[in-house]
Structures are given as C-alpha cells and as structure tokens.
Image (cartoon, rainbow, N blue to C red; front, side, top):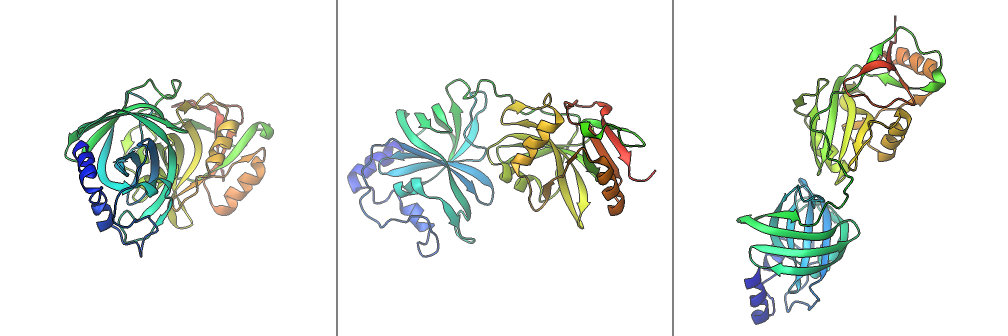
Length: 343
C-alpha cells in the first residue's frame, strides 16, 4: 500500500480505482462509480464501517488514504476485546464517495445485497506500510487503537491494541444445559404469578449467535448441526449483537420453525439471574421473526385460556413459568411446570 501511495503521486491516482470500476456497471448499481481522472485530495482521516448483507454477512472497514478508501472485509466484525483477533480480507480500493453509501446492490451484481453504514468517524495514523497498519479510530460504536497486519496474500488480521471497549462484557458461554419443566397434571392455582406458553412438542435447541454466525447445542448441552437454512439467516438478523437464545424446533403451519421462548445472554450481559418476565420482554424487544424462526407467544396470568387453546390446536400441553423466576441451567423445579393438554 505504501508503494501504491507513491504511484498516486506519479500518475494522479488514475489506476487506484481500476479494479473497482472493472467490477461495477454504473448503469446497474447505485454505488458511486466516479469517472476516471485525478483522485480528490483529502485529509486521510475518515473511516467508515459498513454492514454488508451479501452472500455472507460481513463488515467492511474502509480507511481514507491517498484519495481512496483502502478496504478490508471483516467476516465477524471489528473486535471489541484485545483477546480476540479477527480475519480481515484486503479488497479493492473504493472511491471516497463510498463512505456515504448505503442501499441495495442488485442481484447479479458484484457484492449483491444490502449495505448499511454501521459506524463512521475520523482516525489517526500511527503506522502505514505494506504489511502493517496502526490506527486510532474515533467513531460512535468503535473507538480505540487497532492494528491490521498481513498474514498471507490478501488475508490480514485485525487486533484491538487498547483494553476492552466494554470491560464488563462477558463472552457467550461455550455450552449451556437448558432449564427443564417439572411435569404436573394441572395448572397452578395462583395463575397471576405465572406466564404461560404453548408446549410445541419439538426438539430443544439453544442458539449461540455471534458475529453474524450461529451454532447450536441440544437439550443436553451437546454441540449439534443447525437445521438447513436457519443458522446463517438468524445470524444475519442479529448482525453484530451477540445473543444466546433458547427455543425448540417444531412444525408450524407445515414448516419446521425455530420457536424462540427465552434470551439468556445479550450484548455481553448474562441474563440468567433476571426474572422470567424481564427476559421475555427483552426477547420481545428483539423482534425476532423471520422465514424459519419466530418469537413464541407468551400470556401472563391466563393459563386456562392458553390450555383451552392448546387443546383446540392439538398441542401437547402448556408451560407455566413463574414471572419472578431466574433461569437455572440444567435445573428442573416448580418454577417451570409442564401441564399436558389432555390427561
């Protein structure tokens, strides 16, 4: 990249965007495709991170340098912790106008998909060479000292040099055994103290979503493969937000669907000690409803009506969960009760 900066001084930068232009037809894409000619002069202090929902979700880090945006595709997002290095694939230089681009790149075009601006701001350069770039980013969502270092070919790694952006953040657990319900023959008497859900009769799955990717464990906490067409789209729906979800895979309207009924970890914060009522409201706020996943409904204080609906729909039963109960991994007690729809 240092050599390319020298070339810019000799030829006005005419060749810096040749690869970018070769891959894009301005008649078919809304992306900025400036005419060939001298590159604009800037202060080499602008950066942008764009969330790119293309064939696979990734984040594009772009740094203004020598009249272009030098770019890397970061599959799992910019690391917020120095203990986590992430792959950053060096891509073609982009025009400065791309720092403000967001929109839909049409199907069939290079990079087809949705591009949004995830963060932007200014940066300072501490070092810039063909193999190592050290910068200090000043953005709304990402700030601090970072180094990008080349490993092989166009593959680089990005490392946070500062302490964690959020010192209190905790990583997702590697594995968790789900909480189970105790079997009971009738609903609790104090229904106002409970929330009620349908028992769907499906396969229990916990979904660990991070960096746009999803992995699953089963009812015994063992790693399992995810259903086709679920893990990737669910990961893309959460974007950069890490989350641990509890649910079951069941037939719904003739299609296998992941029905989500609890959230156990979100944005670096464990929620196991939060009461069921608060966890459910947090889950509802995520708006997780897609083609293969759905937030399961819950009904505070109305067990009789839920049980009657379960019988009418031919469902196995009803789950009664105390509104003030924490989540106990691997536990089974009266805080969660499974009542069959038919005795």
